[in-house]
Image (tube, rainbow, N blue to C red; front, side):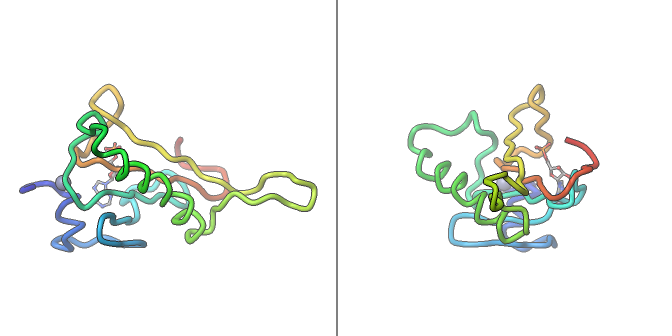
Length: 122
Ligand code: AMP
Ligand code: ZN
C-alpha cells in the first residue's frame, strides 16, 4: 500500500528499531513509547483495521496474538510466577480500531506495552 508508514517500515524503506521479523509479521519499537517496553507488531500484509479482518484472517490473527508473549519475553517483560506462586512482570496487548478507538495509523497493529511501573501513560 502506497503512503502507509507501517508498510514502509515493514519493507525497510523507512527506519525503525526492529525487534522481530518473519515471513508474515514485523515488530518494532514504538517511536513514542508509553512504557519501558512498547512494541508494535504488524502483519506485512496491509490490513487497515481489525474491522477489515474476516474469518479468513483468523489464522493470521491467532499467530499475531501468539507472537505477543514471545516478543514480550524477548523484551524482558514475560509473566512469571515466583516461588510463592505470585505473578511477576507482564504487559498489555492492545489493538486500537478506528477514530473512536484511538487508532492513528491505519495499518493493523498490536501494541505490546510492558516493563516496570510507573509508565508514562496507559
Ligand atoms: P495507534 O494510535 O494505535 O494507531 O498507534 C500508532 C502508534 O504508532 C503510536 O503509538 C505512535 O507512537 C506509533 N508510531 C507512529 N509512527 C511511528 C514510526 N515511524 N515508528 C514507530 N512508531 C510509530
Ligand atoms: Zn500498510
